[in-house]
Length: 325
Image 1 (cartoon, rainbow, N blue to C red):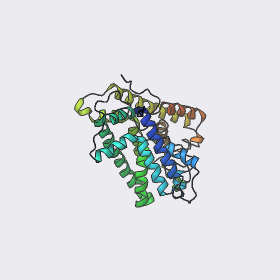
Image 2: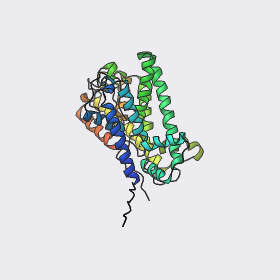
Image 3: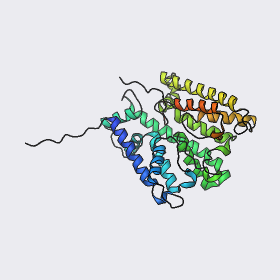
Image 4: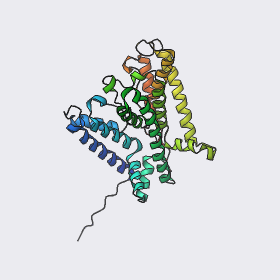
């Protein structure tokens, strides 16, 4: 009697878990190679695994300074992990399927629905097209502005490289940066605390990545549809309220702290307060020394971190995703 071998059928959540695990393991293997290190000394696998996980899950936590420890190869591996993790590996796989004119199967549509926290499979491929188009366009615009700004300071080649690298990192709410190679390890954007261009573009990228693709689609189609969904209204009102309230609290708490806002000009205080209000929820970049913040400010920022970003965005938070019926 022959026994039939039962075919293993993976559910959409299982596919997502296995897919992200595979990406993290591949990233860890690449980052542990000697060529990924600027010095040629390989990063221990546990540290490489941590870095790959942080990049893919766009958390921004690091065990070594990205700008000084990693070579160009290592930095490109990290930014690739950030892009795949921020948009979702299924979105990236769908991009290649579009390029090859491959039909998206029902199973793949179910996985896409799960990855974007959608309650219905209807229009999911159309939404993915929008996700890819919006994301690449926003990243390109941010990269061009950054490149112009930093080319003046770092030279054309490095300025363009930094521009594109950081546009991807900030839009995907990753928080990784390369400025350790310019201003010292783990310095983040502290040298740009009063720079309007860097502050505005960085916060714009973070907020656009953090509100979610469904909200971006609603906003871009508002002129035609003349209305926003309840989800978009909640996300936009909550985001605006959190940014303004956060900036006000940070401004008040840190106004007289000479190690943070106290030594800055009036405009510098405003920029720093808003920047530190935007980044804790999703991104992890900073323009002041976070270790020098008062404990009350640090506790308040922990609350912002817990709230996080919107469902279906490049950096999701604690808010409940849409229910499935």
